[in-house]
Amino acid sequence: MPGIETDGPHIKVDINMKTSIEGCFAAGDCVGKPYSYIKSAGQGQIAALNAVAYLDKLKIEQRKK
Image (cartoon, rainbow, N blue to C red; front, top):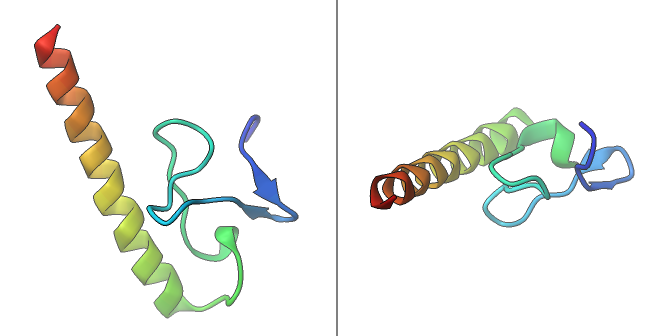
């Protein structure tokens, strides 16, 4: 994806699984080792919860306008 920060072959994310692109979250094997379904599932949950929070924040901001 153009503009997304990487570290070698992996996508860089913060603790909330946010990438360098606003509103874009990543998890699992694409963010680094160890390659494990348990890690992927956990990170996927973190990414999903933070994506929902991001979208909720956008809705609130839209209502204020």
